[in-house]
Image (cartoon, rainbow, N blue to C red; front, side):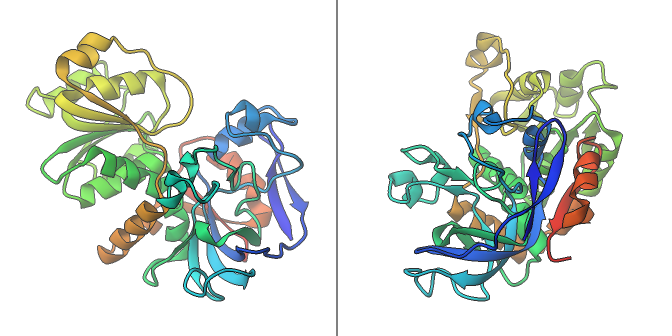
Length: 354
């Protein structure tokens, strides 16, 4: 089979790999949709050569690794020892793209990325991912995809949309609150969509007019372009009776946006950092302590949360598919990432069977 490999410095190759065979406890997923996530750009842009994933804090690799950490498809092979109610031929499934030890308290509650022994594999980063026809993985990493949902929606929930869901759950957002979402890439736009459907008032921020327009289509009540606004905090306070937002999410990783995400919430407010990498500088007393602000770090979601998100989207008919503005064949991956790298478009998805 062919698989997309990031070779560094904004380059990728379509390489040949053997079709996988499942071992004990494993399955093979035929990929029907493999989402493109903003996190992929860190690996796409990273300097080439061995150890580039280690430099990004996710462990070392040996040999070429197939990209894509938002896999969704159909089980086509099952290894020995897999229970019939855990995975079966023809099962429609998302994949939780982490492997842990499988037995520690975090793994046992579906948080394999928080494994006490350290995450063993991140599919699409340190282990083969979804930008190929097939993916081999432990059966315990599968999450059943509701029949009502498309494979593309399942791919989105497998990281970007699921990550937004996890952050909103950590914030405890309710329908009578206002939330400011910094960054309207795939994760931020998912947060805007879900928060609006929960009944909350959404303030969407981004420096891309195209992405702000999509945020409006997805339910944002107020749009702010920080590149065109002299006083971002003032604009948020003016829209919230001078009090500030009840909650905020930073999905941008931008240091200034992160600081403003903390500063824009009201007394007793909550700010959640989702965007990976980088840093932030805060004046702790006025920004946090003296306003009783809660600052939360949220890293993706558990398998339990992934299923809850999928069921919520299915039961409320939330149009997650509309996140995707571009659909690509496997052999179009180079063009797909060149466009996605501009960070002005919506979400892209690779369709390996197309």
